[in-house]
Image 1 (tube, rainbow, N blue to C red):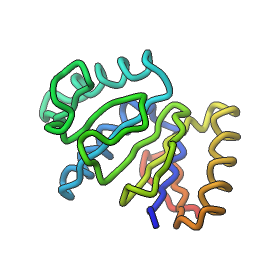
Image 2: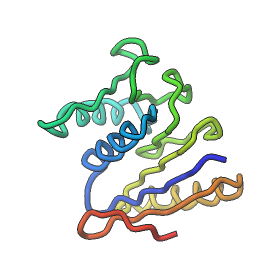
Image 3: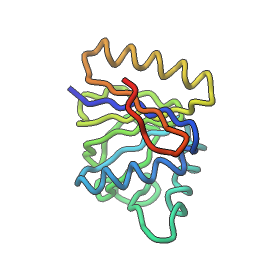
Length: 149
């Protein structure tokens, strides 16, 4: 079964948190898919990943940037896995067709958006009903992640 992690963003935006989590995935030798909720958000995330730090480079791209198979982090709005990723990140309300082919699935949602919180609750129920191992992480006021469930 796929390990599923729910990340409840409260004190920092996705654009600041996502790069750190992607770096950790790459440090583990994993390839990643980031599925966004729409094309506009995909472009915003792509731009944020290019500019989030002056001290590091996060190798990533979209279909417009060349062969997906060569990208350690592939950004998309589709359900395919062209870089044979181990980890799927779902952001901005993106829904997966299936998570069974991934070692880990990370669902990130904005805790300041009631609709996003409600959708995450529904996804939690569905994930648990499918038998996946799910954990819930909430951002502390210091920006650290605390396991809540």
